[in-house]
Length: 178
Image (cartoon, rainbow, N blue to C red):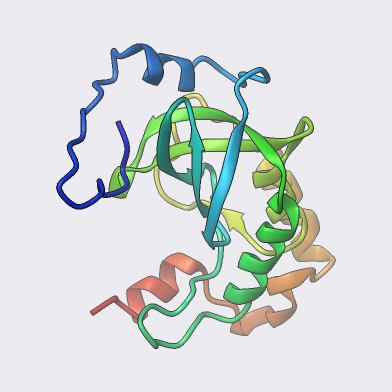
């Protein structure tokens, strides 16, 4: 299964959740299976290659400021969040702990570099908040909430905006994609 379009005139085999490759993805942090980061789309979405697949990963449990789409205005700190994620991941192999497939056909996952939880690092830097929607079933977001509170109190990253801060969820609602 890949959520990236096939080459022109190419074919794609859709893998069901019972397929062995999918089972490898959801079997916890598989430190032996590393993925190459191909692209960072924004502060919470990347494209990776591994297991003979190319697919998108949505960092589970977090929501980073939005980047403008097709010339639209970006949310404050959207570009900084993307650049910081690129810095954390740049040229490194990653391990993922998948929580299944989420919206837009992306793997929901915690991403790790050398044992460090990158999702959590985005929150610590004040460049993501804890996702306000439905969390994956087995994701324990307590540490995320604790670190978000620390970043807020220290006014790190996006939290420097104080009362003028809008959550990514609110920003998306006020700036729908056309």
